Image (cartoon, rainbow over all chains, first blue to last red; front, side):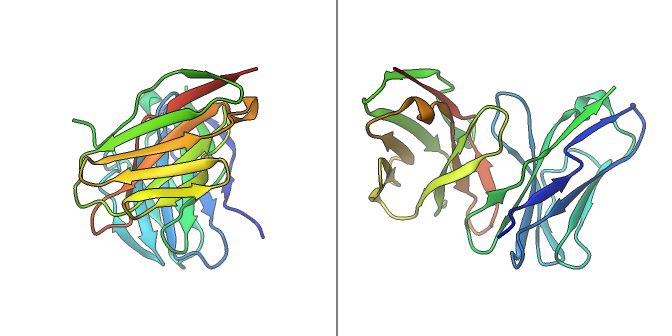
Length: 111
Length: 111
C-alpha cells in the first residue's frame, strides 16, 4: 500500500511569507507526527495528533508554527512570517500502534 | 543532559565484522525503544523495536535493552557496505506517544 506522502517536496520562499506543508498519512493510521530535522541531527519532535485531536504541541518552536488535522487524515503544518532559521527538512510520520513510518519530507529554504 | 545520547561517529568497521551501536536515555519511565536507519538524503526507516530487557534478534540485527542501566544497543552481524548509513535511536516519553531521537551514529562499512 501507499506510504506517507508529503508535499511539496521542496519549498523555497522569501522571509516573511507564510508556508503550508502537507502530510498524507498511511490510510487508517490514527496517529500523525511532525518533526523537523537539521543536517547531521536526529528528527526533532514538533507536534502530534491522534485522529483530529492535537495531543501535544510542546515541540513547536513559537507561535508562528501551527498544525491541524481537521478530518483526522491529512495534516497541514503552517509557518507564518517565515524566518531564515526556519530552513530545515520537515518530516511527517504516521502510526497505527507504536511504530512510526516516515514520509519523504519537505525541504524548506527561506531566503 | 540530553534525553537520548548517541556517539555521532563515524564508526568504521570492515566488511563482515560486527558493528555495535550504542544509545543511552534519561527517562526511566520509557517503555519503547526503536532503531531507525537513515541513508544520506533519505527518510528514516524502522529496523527494529524492543520493549523488554534482553536481546531481540531479527536476521543480522540484534537489539539489546538494559533498563536498569538505561542503555539500548544495536548489533549488526556480517556488516555489509550497504549497511553504511546513520543509525538513529528513538525512545518514547513515558505515558505519551512522543518519540525522542538521538543525533544518530554514522556507520561506515568498508570493503
